[in-house]
Length: 195
Image (cartoon, rainbow, N blue to C red; front, side):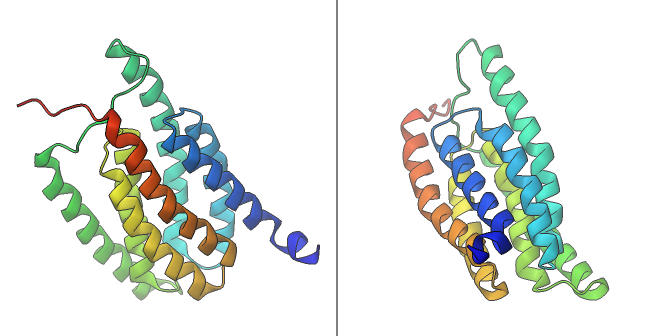
């Protein structure tokens, strides 16, 4: 009972995070309001651990969850169907997305290493920047978002285990499995790319 009392916020984050991703896999728009709650909880948890890039990431998640909520509700309706279709990322966007991840990871990592007491600034920055991109891809319902989430989750598990945030390490391990489930659930709904 003492463990629960000491770690209740991390446990609440774990539960809300799992439910949020489960709803995303199911293509349920309620993933976004729940994601807002999860992101706010996580801001507090990672700030206490000195993972400053993760603080920025979860503040970004607050905004992206609002965007995703709107986009899934109204963009799909503009296409005259009940739900937004799953798509591939357009080929021309890949160099930009990969360049953003690499460049911003190096810049953010350098900043946190040089000017703060951040722990593990470069891997923390990678997960943050890559998550910016993956969250945008999820909000746009791009299938490859699940591949990027998988890579991010691997790094996050290692980071959280190293920092002793065991509940979040467990959460991200489950996210690894859920990323595979998400890919498999969205793949049959993929809209073919026009020739």
